[in-house]
Length: 298
Image (cartoon, rainbow, N blue to C red):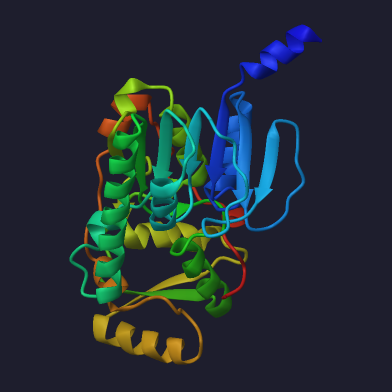
């Protein structure tokens, strides 16, 4: 019994935010698999499990937290986390926070809301880095590309919902901009793997998926695995824009603005080498399945 208590006291302890999100759920699984004791914060009530303690609250109404943990990990909105971290009194030698490659991709967007997002992401990254430095903590910032795998992402799942409803999905011709979709399980592994390596300290890493492919090829793979499969229709840009406006007037394909359409023809490619060299990041190729996507248009 005494030996069991000693072993438990040696378990590393992680405080996790965004625990019920699309990255957070596999992150909890990965941490527990690696032998971590986890305290997770959620707005909703959850039942504790062996090695997992749930606290109810959010960044504006935080419950009482442990005074010291071995790592703080955030897989939720970086802006909110950065403000909390700057004012929090918790002691931790490691902090890992997910942001987004949007910090670079949307910096010069034609959409002012997207430019504002990029600016807020950059300020949040700077805030985490500054706060960690003041506390002699090592930080790592992780920037995923196009996330998929949990049926909750804002791009491929939206495409799947629209295709389920229409039995087809239109794209403008020459939607050949390169993409690197990344699976949520690979992101969860990256967050855990980077904690224990000095090479990841005080750095930001882009986290692309393991395959680079054209936008229309990526979409076609999604459409083929849907039940039933949907057809990809490529249209001249003026015809596509007209069809998009008609669809949006009927509550279909919402969220595809002019900036998103413009990016379909632009390469958004990021280098996997820094993360691979620092902590062995090895993401999978893009192999979607029907279970990864919702069936109805939101």
